[in-house]
Amino acid sequence: MKHIQKYTDEPLGRLEVVDDFLPPPDQLVLKEDGVKVTISLSKKSVDFFKAHAARSKVPYQRMIRSLLDAYAERHAGRPLTTRSTGRRSRQEAGEARSARRR
Figure 1 (cartoon, one colour):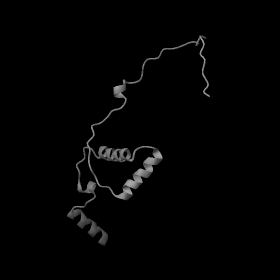
Figure 2: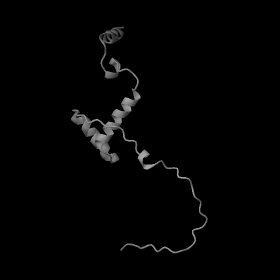
Figure 3: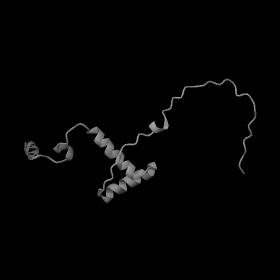
Figure 4: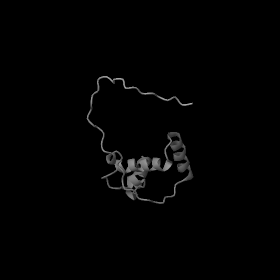
């Protein structure tokens, strides 16, 4: 059985009014425009995100989106180069082979 709280007209004591410091509700959550995409991921990657998302009690898609957003933010303003794509130019590959031979 639930306990019912009874309130009385007793004085509350010294009260102080504080300024409203919270932003308006429309500014609490800044929602960015989303774009729907279809992407094929490896089963291993999806299983990884699903497992970690379950532990954190968040949707795994949100976790993947956060990772992509963090990556894009870190590399924003930088040109997408062969190094950031993980591919070497022919010149870089040749230089790497030469360095290993030394």
